[in-house]
Amino acid sequence: MLGVPAETIGDREFYPRVVLGEYFQSQLAALLAKAVARGHVVDVKGRHRVVDVKLCEQDIKVEVATLDGSTENHVFDHVVMATGHDWPEKTETKPGFFISPWPAANLDTIADVSVGVLGTSLSGIDAVVSVATSHGSFLLDDSGVMQYHTASETGFHITMMSRKGLLPEADFYCPIPYEPLAIFTAAAVDKIVENAPDRLLDEMFDLFRAQLLASDPGYAERIGLGMLTVETVADAYFAERGAYDPLTWAAMNLGEAKANKASRTTVAWRYAILSMHEVVLRAVPHFNDQDLKRFHNHFKTLFVDDYATVPHQSIERLLALHRAGRLSVLKLGSDYSLDNDTVATGAAVDIGNVRHTFAAFIDATGQQAISAWDVPFPSLIEQGAVRQARTAKASTAFGAMDDTAEIATGGIDLDSQFRPKFEKPISHNIYCVSIPFLLHKLPFVQGITSAEELGTLVASAILDDVEKRGFGINAVRTLASDPLWQ
Ligand SMILES: Cc1cc2nc3c(=O)[nH]c(=O)nc-3n(C[C@H](O)[C@H](O)[C@H](O)COP(=O)(O)OP(=O)(O)OC[C@H]3O[C@@H](n4cnc5c(N)ncnc54)[C@H](O)[C@@H]3O)c2cc1C
Image (cartoon, rainbow, N blue to C red):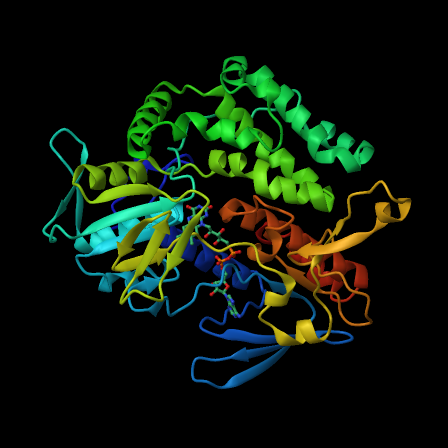
């Protein structure tokens, strides 16, 4: 029914979102049926919005708004906050100005006009494809090349834009699970965390450099790796791509990715960076404030670029739109301004003295990391149950006192079981795995695999707690030994 032949299903393939949605929904239904069959009580309350969470001495009160506007109150022993990204329902905040590409149906009102899309990552591509498909169709021609067909007026044109003016690269072939790294290992990074907390980022960068040099000496030489620093490595990483027109590079890179996929060839430097990004995560929570800032501002970006490659079909669609004369990419640079006040619809972007005007404009930069004060449950804030994550201050030349000082830097301060840290005689059994609150200290914790890891961690923390507290021990044993809950 969804048009995916069984023989094309594989763990390296990409599927339309609607297919994934159907898959996850049926997985959930199967899981619930299995749970009920084993005697568990599971109550799924769809279309109910939690409006407040309050921690009491022994338990946790949850206030819920139902669809008919009434309120329900529930009490739980454990509560998991897994609220995901908070997408606004109303996205067209001014005529023709959209603060988010989702829900995509909102973009259907965009007419045959000049459309600006801020952000060139997968979210930007989503926005472009949503608008393009409401104005035309993507079809394969006789030679199997994706083409875009539209009857729209010639005024219909989309401009994607970002500071660097680069597009993401195509998903690249590599062995999964990752082969072990020889130098940039978890043990080596843990050792630096232990021995050189105040030089952690620079020491880790040395290790990164040694690994990349060993994995792909030719690439290391090409980007001048030996002379690079935390501050300069990203510029070197993006330099070659930046020297080309973005859509020309996209076509070349797609060709390379397709050929490598067919011949099962791995590009060593891409694979090394991809494997390293998981190990880097071990160190980030231990950075001092200066290193954390340097990491977020400079070093992080090349890891994000390397793992956030996109399905081949997404690049094919961008190229088809470009060939049809409907898409271009604009480099904003670091000195541009966005004006949605003085224009009748959409927005204008000023770069130096040049003004680019768009009758429709979509902000597709995605949701950023958010902080403890953005928690949508007022009681948690009033109770002082959430506070910003702490980071050690870099030591200064003036005194040892600063060595132990910490400052609040963002996100939510969580313990190793993802429970907010606070010192009050109220229940600590609230777990926060809402990704925007975690990104500050866990910058790569995105996607369904991360959601699964966080879910597993919190589920076992809850089971441990229940067992420790000795209530419902028989029921707990049933749950703990039940593969459904592991
Ligand atoms: C367009 C798009 C494409 C993506 N594609 C991929 C992909 O191909 N592969 C991949 O790995 N990841 C992908 N992701 C990322 C992936 O969707 C997320 O990482 C994942 O969904 C996070 O899971 P989550 O359970 O933390 O949050 P979510 O899936 O966002 O779930 C949070 C849920 O909580 C509900 N909720 C929020 N607040 C409340 C409240 N107050 N009361 C009650 N309910 C509430 C929300 O309605 C939502 O149902 C994509 C994301 C987007 C937006």
